[in-house]
Image 1 (cartoon, rainbow, N blue to C red):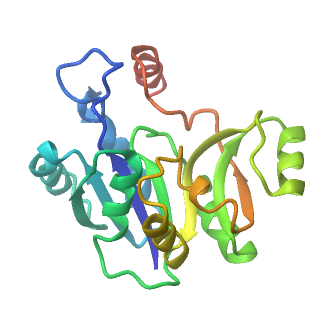
Image 2: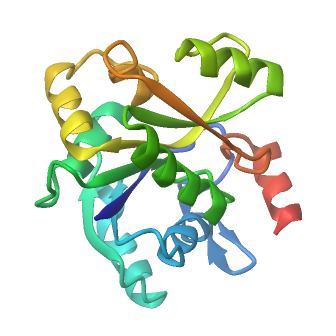
Length: 216
C-alpha cells in the first residue's frame, strides 16, 4: 500500500493573514486542498493521512467532506515540531512494514503526479530511501555518485520510505529536531534522488503566495 502523509501544522507567521496560510483561499479553494487534490487524484496513492494543527481538526474534516476526499483515512493533530507531527501521522494507522510512505509538505501545492510516481518507482527499484530534489544536472550527478546530500542541492518533498524504516527512525531519534525526514536515515540507508520541479515550491511568504495565485 502507498500512503501519503501530508503535514501542515504550522502557523504560517511570515504570511500576513488572519488564518493559517494552508487555509487561505485561492480562487475560492483553500491552499491545502490543492495539495490534497494531487494525491487524491494520483493512481499511485492508496491512502492519505493529514496532519493539521490541533485547533483546526474539525475544519479540516469539513474540507475533506466538502471535497469528497475518499482516500483520506486519518486526520491527526500535529506536535510541537515538524518531526513530532510526522511521527503522529506515521503512527495514526495500522500500516505494514513494507508499506510505502510519502511524506509531503502541505504548503507545496504544485507537486505533480509525475513526481509522486517517480518517488514510488525509485524506492521499489533501488530500495533505500528517496528524496525529491531540484538542482543542475551536474549537482545531481555528484549526489548520485555519493549517495549523500551536497550543499548546492535543493531538497523538496515528497520524501519516500518503507514504513518500517521511517517509523523506527522516528522512534530512535525523537527530539533531535533534524531538518527533514531524509536526515533521520541518510547515515544508515542509501539515498536515491528524484528530480523535482521548480513549481513544487514551498509557500512561505506573501511573495510565494502571490506567485502561486498567478500560476493558478
